[in-house]
Length: 246
Ligand SMILES: [Mn+2]
Image (tube, rainbow, N blue to C red; front, side, top):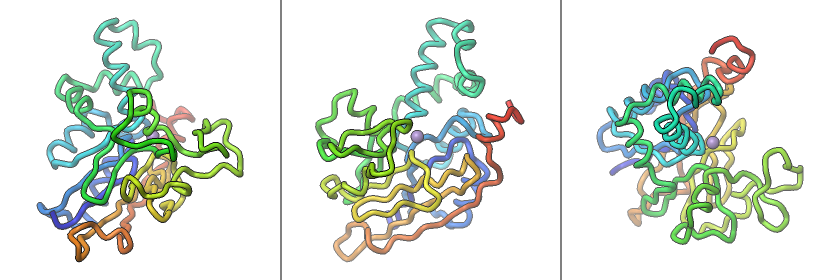
């Protein structure tokens, strides 16, 4: 394994993803992994995204969107067509696009992945969490964390105040150098022991990849990494909300 390449939230933006991989010049020694939220909100259906990931041996951790769609697919299997009417159109489209192989793929995704000194997860951690002691609720929580209050408890996006700190600003590096996504920033959010690489491709921003190479100690060099970007073709989610596409 020469390079580790981590991609931000894809949300169905397959064309930008392909263009970004071309730009990087992926080769068979590279280890590629996504921070989760591969599916939903964007232009390409979940089945297409998952097939592409499998065809190219690209790994991923669970995002909150994968967790949601796993639940919805299960409900659909037990309740049938009627259940789909309770979903938003893009959620129903995801469920209908999944086959049992896709469902197995989603179920096989881990909540986090450690690669030597690197850790990939979707959301974030609080100072009270350790990755080897997460119960079910906390596992779900690490896909959702963005900002923390003064007691370092996660705050809901709707309750967020200016003085709240982004989780990575108070993260001390105890679980390795973390690459995350989930909360979109205009540029990658770089902290001492973590970087959030969700730059909102599905919202008309850009798709970001971060590339790590080995250092002299055979770890990954977390001081000299590189970003590669691919500009989004459209504000897909904005267009969806405005009813310009289904
Ligand atoms: Mn997310």
